[in-house]
Length: 184
Picture 1 (spheres, one colour):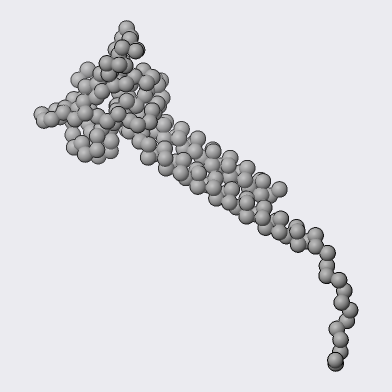
Picture 2 (cartoon, one colour; picture 1 turned 180 degrees about the horizontal axis):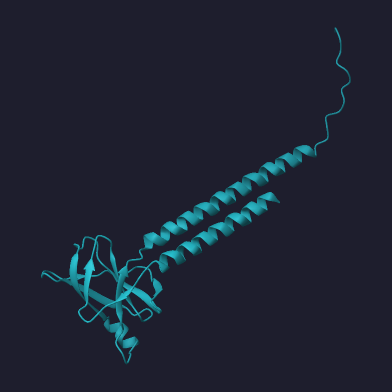
């Protein structure tokens, strides 16, 4: 009985932790719509580009404001969407590894296949914010999985110990051998 309670509680805690953690990470993102100049500042942390259209594949290129070679932003492996400023934003690009911190002019456009499959009257709105990387989510789920696994293991150990004790308690006592022999 106690093992079942430990199991249920550990699974509930792990599930609650992962859901709450994922929501907290998603809520902590603040997406700022790009203005007409499309000037963005890239710092040490990766920068993400979001679009206000679900699953609209886009290609984004950043050109240094001081001049230099343009850098193509990476397409995320996993689809992320967040709610910020009363809008739903889908992450469509992240700054590439090794992009030098500085000010850039960002240009984003839907890919040809996306534009053909999702024609629209008004152009999409792009925004920037912190990148939600797969690693953030993986850490949350790893911790939740660890908490759940520890609880499940504890429940199994407790169930085995309880079963062994009960089986020993049900054994009949050894037959009476009589008093020990004296001086033989």
